[in-house]
Length: 208
Image 1 (spheres, rainbow, N blue to C red):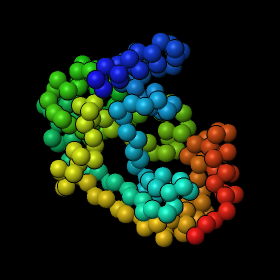
Image 2: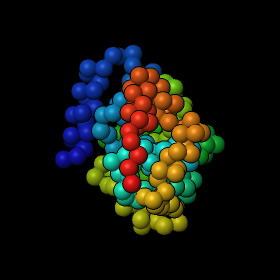
Image 3: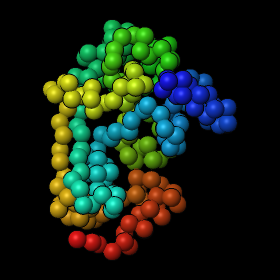
Image 4: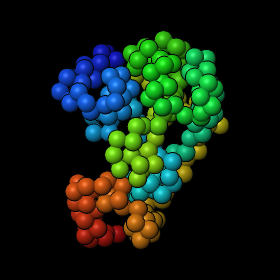
């Protein structure tokens, strides 16, 4: 099943990664690190920044012929329906979002998340492992059930989210304005990979 596959992937990531790659040996630290480096996990990337969201919706030149969409989620409302153990942890910290340390205290690890009830959605702040996390104003979400889909869960709770459609006809204009504001791969993905992605897109001839 999906949960067994997730456990195998996480176990092998732990096995081959450097032991000092995470501050403490916990599922949540390893999952956030794996997600950060491109390994498929049940975690989903979000951002606090509408500019970063617009960048993600307009960065793929192969999708410029179709509309884009930005999902905006009220994580305070989402967390108001969490199981009691998780709501208690938020209350004890006076927080609206979880950290890895808070989840370590409140959950029996990723495998046991669903034992608390559910399905439910959790938002957490990733550890600031490098400039990319900081520059992207990054946020992560996780479903308690590995087989559940965030969009399906939210669709049943319309008061918790909004969807903003970016018409395909406006993508080039939005992209130009984001580039002028320096919201680019070079800034959001510091390093040579981000620089290369930015240059490749920047010098691709405009179509349409």
